[in-house]
Image 1 (cartoon, rainbow, N blue to C red):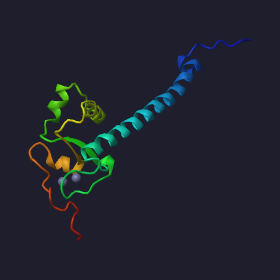
Image 2 (spheres, protein in one colour):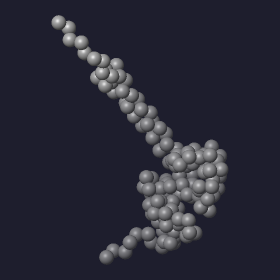
Image 3 (cartoon, rainbow, N blue to C red):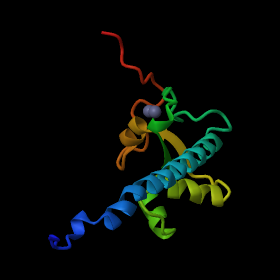
Image 4 (cartoon, rainbow, N blue to C red):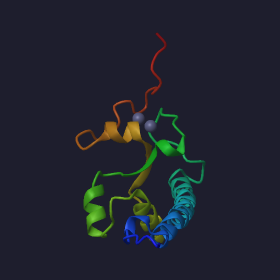
Length: 137
Ligand SMILES: [Zn+2]
Ligand SMILES: [Zn+2]
């Protein structure tokens, strides 16, 4: 006697199949995007570091770990600039923009600490010109 099984879409292998494959393709695309954006970041940061390996441009700061570095708008109008050029929130959109516009002046590379310290109210990092390394206790 044949048992009649009701069709259950959650058990369908046809449904499960592509779903198993899709993340891999997605991951591949994400990985290649990541590689591209890392390359782009290095290129852009290097340019704003005068052709040297990317490092924080704040005097006295020695951070050169790329993951900590950010492209900063010198006069702090980042949001305005991004909006005017229809750039999203992703940093790589800004990197692409500056590269496509021949690296216009008005940008600098800062580490997230110095950039954050500079913030909206302070004109510069409070440690600019001083040692950024805490004194040994
Ligand atoms: Zn710094
Ligand atoms: Zn600083």
